[in-house]
Amino acid sequence: MSSVASCQTASLAARHAMRGARSVKKPTGVSAKPVRATRAPLKCDAFLDKIKAGLEGVMKGDPSVKTQVRYQPRVDAINALESAMKQLSDDQLRAKTKELQTKVRSGAELDSLLVESFALVREASSRVLGLRPFDVQLIGGMILHEGQIAEMRTGEGKTLVSALPAFLNALGGKGVHVVTVNDYLARRDAEWIGQIHKFLGMRCGLIQSGMSDAERRDGYESDVTYVTNSELGFDYLRDNLAQTPAELVLRDFNFCVIDEVDSILIDEARTPLIISGLADKPSERYVQAAKIADAFEKEFHYTVDEKQKSVLLTEEGYEAAEELLQVTDLYDPRTQWALYIINAIKAKDLQIKNVSYIIKGKEVVIVDEFTGRTMEGRRWSDGLHQAVEAKEFLPIQNETVTIASVTYQAFFKSFPKLGGMTGTAETELTEFNNIYDLQVQVVPTNRNVQRDDSQDVVFRSESGKWNAVRQEIARMHKKGRPVLVGTTSVERSEQIAVLLDEEGITYELLNAKPENVERESEIVAQSGRKGSVTIATNMAGRGTDILLGGNAEFMARLRVRELLMPRVVMPEEGDIAFEKKNLGGGKEGKWRVKGTALVLSQIPPTLFYL
Ligand SMILES: Nc1ncnc2c1ncn2[C@@H]1O[C@H](COP(=O)(O)OP(=O)(O)OP(=O)(O)O)[C@@H](O)[C@H]1O
Ligand SMILES: [Mg+2]
Image: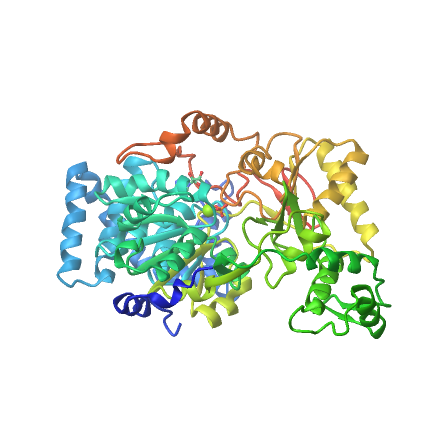
């Protein structure tokens, strides 16, 4: 086992300390198009509707109306620069970047350069990607720049939004991190949005798992770096264990934009990132304890508190264990049998296969009970993981000792400025505020949301609920409507699969099982095909476009990627790996046609949350 944590040099310690935790609905009215009046009294309907809807929004306290009012003057100012920007050549646009950089270096406040920078990025995006950021996207960008969270509905184009504040905050040369939840999204965003930065003369970096230190250092030296939360977190930990400055890969933090911020800052907040070393050889005691736990009876030998996730041995349990093991004290510190037995019972009663964990090859892989996502490489601590391995008759891996650890919560607090984007932040408003001192602003949608969000349906019994689910899916499926069923656990998703098998409905099942995970993006992308039924735990497809009729562009890109993998993963400077087409506007409510979201409903695509 190594103990490098204590050998940091003074200058490194100072640097780490410096980096250390800083104490530690609609856009009502705006989109109502004037319609030609067919009857005289209706002549000014559109105008009146606009005013009425605006007023209603304010009266009802629609937060997106407030946001719009607040940022509109700056949006107008950016719009006013549009025609001038259009007249500049590509080289003149790049020269503008240099001009802005010089201003920042000579002490100009970033705020004073926001309008010009955003107008510049908008023009670059129109030229390079064919996407002209909408006014609401400019608003989202301003919110991020202010170090707040922008809540933008799914499909509103958050990926492009991040380019605006990233460019502005990179002008000072101190680097900006754009953080996403997985390697696929980091690469997609770097290859796609990164083209804007490159066009404007900035360096864009990408960090992927498996990269060497030299590649990481180079990526982090860029003006804008696309990276996942876990790569960034682990690089931070490894830097903290570095023994010479030459080993460091990160530089000091400046500004970070987190995509899917709720998933990273709330759902995974307390998940520790751990770098560990190997301890002694695994103990045979795990196997013996597993046998004892298997023979023991609940309520007689032990009791379980499901809520607290704790177990207690009864008097009978103690005696039986001591007798079986031929020992006089289960708590003897030299053997610590009690610990092994308690863990073995926890493994038996509290860690359920295909709910709490899955078996992949010869390994026990933890499943996040909230998202259904597998947490590869993570292990339960204090011998619990080994106890589950013993229960499953798998090879027991060495115990590990923590060398360095940090939670995402503490880690992200060490950024001087942090902005985030998500489709759903309002529900976690208080947590963002209390824990991270982050305000949430709701951004209006570009167009009216056409999705029909139904009321929740509550059932008296589980069986009633499952029957209703089965009937509703079958009814929608008969009409040819694509159906996406969201569940919170692997077990639930399989329960629904059984129901559909009984109905004779074919479906795609997307849960943490390894054989499904590999096709995650592909399955989600195609879930909008006519008649398709997709069951997914809520881990699935974040960031993947679902198009009605299926996503031909996505499939084509996937195939090209498979063929050209090595080259596409590491795009050359200026290399355009793939291009997103302008699809004529951000989609409303993710499915680009009128749809229904049903929390346990009817017409075009149907989405169930269970
Ligand atoms: N200004 C724009 N003009 C036209 N199309 C746009 C614009 N901005 C984004 N889009 C398109 O909208 C689609 C959705 O974008 P994106 O995936 O960034 O949305 P999102 O808000 O991140 O969604 P999710 O919450 O699902 O991650 C993409 O196909 C993108 O090309
Ligand atoms: Mg997104």
